[in-house]
Image (cartoon, rainbow, N blue to C red):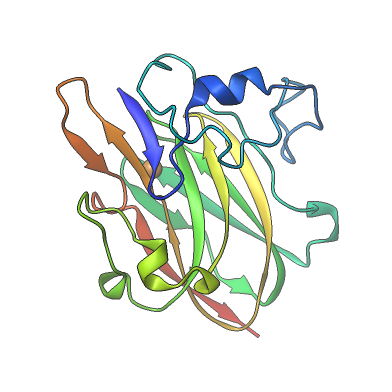
Length: 188
Ligand SMILES: [Cu+2]
């Protein structure tokens, strides 16, 4: 099977080519080689030829200056925040307890059902307005942690995974459509 993202289709194999030794993930899982970049330069190559090659954690921002931390558990297929969040620079530490890669996209909003979707059931960033898509922790493997720092004002946000899988038989599966979205309240 393959994985892709709506509007920014890319292949794990291309990311692997870009692999360089970089800072370890902000959490404690050691000194594995990390990848940087991978911002979509691989467009057009998402042919599924990358089977067996997985993404790696690409931490977002500088967690050392974060004001607070929000742990988030990702599974097949849910997003489960572990406690309240406080406004400021929030270090979101995501733990993937599922069997597949997942990601965390941070979106301004207070109602998952109100988010627009595309033909595959994925969240449609363009239709919603990219200015309300604050950022994301890119897909990372099952069984690992990854983190990102996001500057969040008081309010409501949706945390979601927007990966789309294409099974060997051609079946499309959207993680968002499967339930990987939840609302968090960020207090002042
Ligand atoms: Cu997912």
